Amino acid sequence: MPRPPAPRPRAPGLAPRALPRAGALALVLILAACSDSAPVPEKPPVAVRVTTAERGPYSPTVTLTGTVAARTESDVSFRIPGRIAARLVDVGDRVKAGAVLARLDRTEQEADVTAARATLNAAEATLRQAETNFTRQDRLFARGYATGSVRDAARETLQRARGAYDAAKAALGTAEEQLAQTELLAEIDGVVTARYAEDGQVVNAAEAVFKLAEDNARDAVFDVFEKATSSEPVEGRVALALAEDPAVTAMGRVREVAPALDAANGTLRVKVAIEAPPPSMTLGAAVTGRATFAARDLVDLPASAFFVTAGAPSVWIVEETSNRVAARAVAIDRYLTGRILVSQGVADGDRVVTAGAQFLTEGQVVDPRPETDVAQAGR
Image (tube, rainbow, N blue to C red; front, side, top):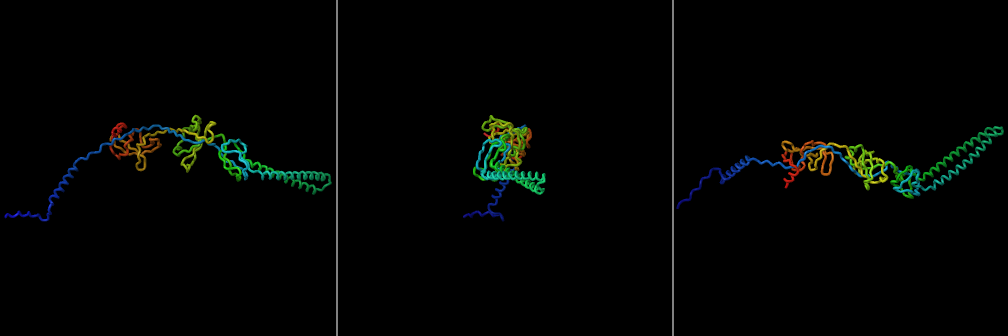
């Protein structure tokens, strides 16, 4: 019987199946070398929409709503304390200078006047008696029938009587003045714009009872955001119109701008003096004000052109020769609906990316196209 073939001797230190693994590694290295030598295709330029920047004059117009207010308003109050017996006017009433607005209870003051008048009458009677006595003593002294001491005593009594009479007369004047102060009078022609007290209420001296607006010069008052007050309107003039009837118009001039912001709404109060206000522009009426500001050279760009980089607004500028994009920071002068006005950062003739900006990186090559071509490429 023939013997089976003897097994082939193994090489010392070589494990079984080592040769197949070495072959696989060599194949991987060959494939890697082939892939490194193959050229990597470049990305095609991104189609973007661009616009050519044109710097031109921009004359902003601001329209705001405000109210008509009196140029001069003052609180009206009694000069003495007391209880209000009658209130004769209300908010919105027109009054003339000297008109009675309210009255205090005057019982005490009338009693004071009566007592002061009685005191004055008594002092007047005493004065007359002293004058008569002195006249008689002076004649007797001239004839030698009276001594000098008697005449001097009569003169002293007369002087005391005159002092008492003058004091009583002054007291009566004070009492009558206090009685007159129980009536609150309007010092100017105007309109009652506020009421702070009611019938029967006890008020102190100088405590406000009404607010009276002088019915002559009027202002249109607006609450304006600080940005709008950075410059004045042309010649400081504002076109005004009645809100409920725009046909009623007037011209005004900026008279006063508040020096500090209103903490409640972050606005500045602007007062515009109304020139020859129409009768229908009454106090409290709503008006619109239209102000045109001096023209400035700005670049008008769509809002879609802007993005923020490093915390600053920026745009992509397409270079003329290479069509590569570069980010450029800009200064924004004003925001409009869907558009932004740029004061710095963009020059005349710059090509600005207006669509596709969100897909770009610094130095990327783009394919600038008109808007119609970009729209077709996106289909």
